[in-house]
Amino acid sequence: MRALHTDSTVTVYQAYRPEIGKAAARNGRFPSAWSRERMTWIKPSFLWMMYRCGWGQKEGQETVLAIEISREGFEWALRRACLSHHVPELHGDQAEWKRQLKRAPARVQWDPERDLRLRPLPYRSLQLGLSGEAVRRYADEWIVAIRDVTPLAHETHALVRDGDLDSAARLLPEERPYAAGDDVLAHLRLGPGEVAERCEGSPG
Image (cartoon, rainbow, N blue to C red; front, side):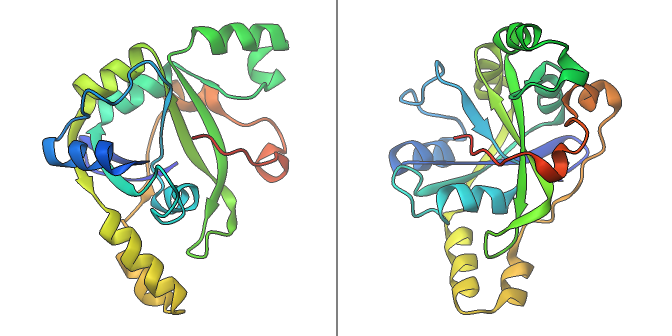
């Protein structure tokens, strides 16, 4: 797991329509129009976010946010998360996995990380889905700061289009390995062979 992080915070990314995203960046919290009833996916990988939102050009995802949250909150969600797909070694039978998934306030999906041209890389990036109690805690307790990084997305994309990958790479956030103990991640491991073989999904 890689992320831009400090001793007390971790940065995740989301993209929204301007009415939501710009208000969130301006006020440091999500506006009332932001729904607490829906699952919301946060992504520690800037380039995976660029893949998902098309460098901030997809409809409804034009404003890209870097959201700094507490490590305590991030790890609270990971400890209580369930994998979004069934792994027999972790869950037993499929019925038990479905029960765990229904109870969990968070879910995890591992998808191939992306390079600057948004091509898949041979290692995985975390997508963390929050619902119910996790969404409320995220919005009300965990957020430390919200920044609009849409200009960064556009500038990086322009350099990639021009073929200047070295300059584009220098703009990327410094996403370092995030140390988390087995108590945080052991229940979120992919099954044998899945790192190489599992088909990619695309949570929103």
